[in-house]
Image 1 (tube, one colour):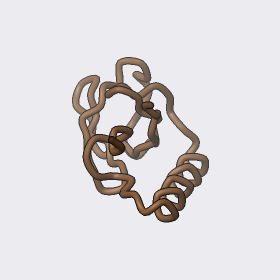
Image 2 (cartoon, rainbow, N blue to C red):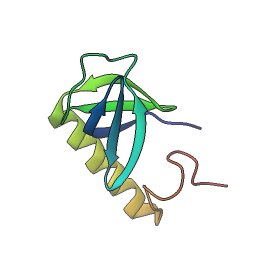
Image 3 (cartoon, rainbow, N blue to C red):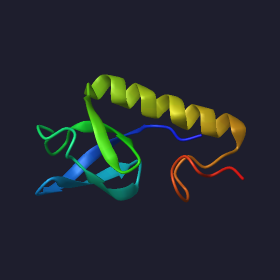
Image 4 (cartoon, rainbow, N blue to C red):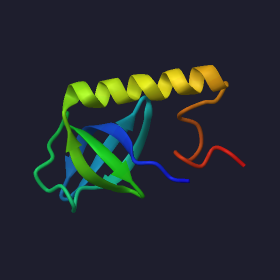
Length: 86
């Protein structure tokens, strides 16, 4: 199962961004959200930002992910996001 994950845009170059996922940075396409800007939170699925998020909602979602992984003993940000389980 794959999930869309919120991340914060750190830098922009053309229609691509470097996005921070709680310390893990990935290159993300902004083709689907061309108005996204530095410091915006975006919802990312399969390497594409698919929505710009309200900052408070994004931070709450990230908090929930951390709580879930803490209670299950998982590491939310190791390896490929959404593909940690065998």
